[in-house]
Image (cartoon, rainbow, N blue to C red; front, side, top):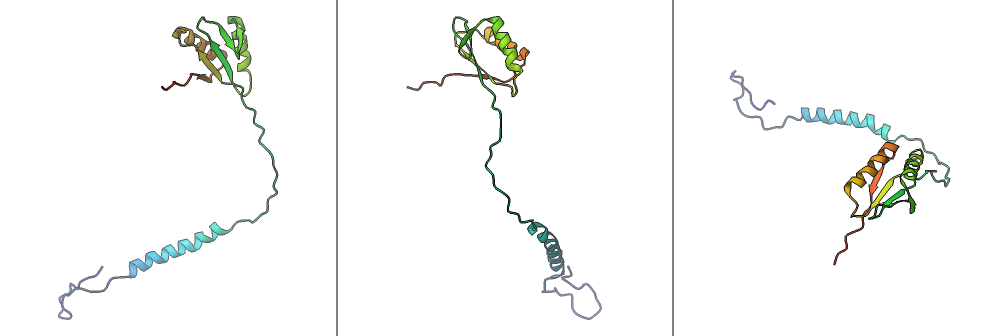
Length: 142
């Protein structure tokens, strides 16, 4: 970046140089040119294939959702069928052994005490049913 001559040997006066030094910019441009020359062929070379087409669907086993309902008077329903405490535990154990693990959807009447819901959640967790969902009705707008 020599813009001025600081020598005091009677030659030219210490004036400013009015030209821009292009050498650093040319060096940068040459480096970029070399980088692009090396990387561009790597990006465009690909093996061109005509792959066969087939229609197939992935065989995914969808987990069955289980609905556990509790009415206001405390009656429990497993997928719509009334069950007692012993049957409920047996059904939870059987459901926990399924692969993939089903989701337990709790539909509980709003008048059922929180302790009852917490007990159901604890029983489900103890039996191995970790996927829980709470089902609610949408709020009606007037």
